[in-house]
Amino acid sequence: MSYAGAKLMLFLGDDLLVIRRDDKAGIPWPNCLDFPGGGREGAERPEECALRETFEETGLTLPESALAWRQQHGPSWFFAAHLPRDAASRVVFGNEGRGWELMAPATYLSRQDAIPHFRQMLESYLASR
Image 1 (tube, rainbow, N blue to C red):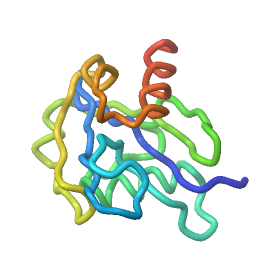
Image 2 (image 1 turned 90 degrees about the vertical axis):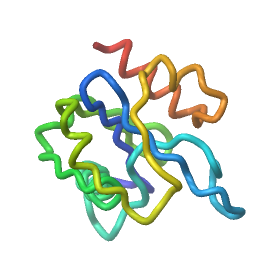
Image 3 (image 1 turned 135 degrees about the horizontal axis):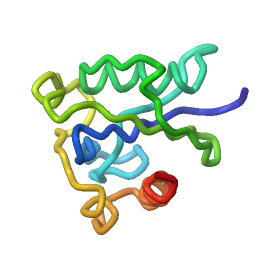
Image 4 (image 1 turned 90 degrees about the horizontal axis):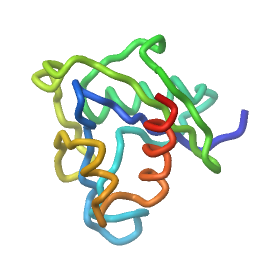
């Protein structure tokens, strides 16, 4: 399967965990609101990529069975998963990005600093529920 990377729309309770991207030249969507995830390593499957990157960026370990939704968008895969709200107390922010926060999905959809095609993926997921 050919793909470049994977992202996870991770809900903690009713809110979405979002990461503020670094604000530096040379990266896509600098200073925008991102989902955990990133580039493929080796021969890993999209699910493995999303879960590994989520662990690296948030410290949260999820089993593959937690992935409730999946959809490919261009060279990337998007997934959704839900954890209880108290999982926020276990977040250990990694070394990429400027910080993380929890945000209502409707808030993310209305933000100008949300990545446009990520808003589209979130809308697709919410419509499927």
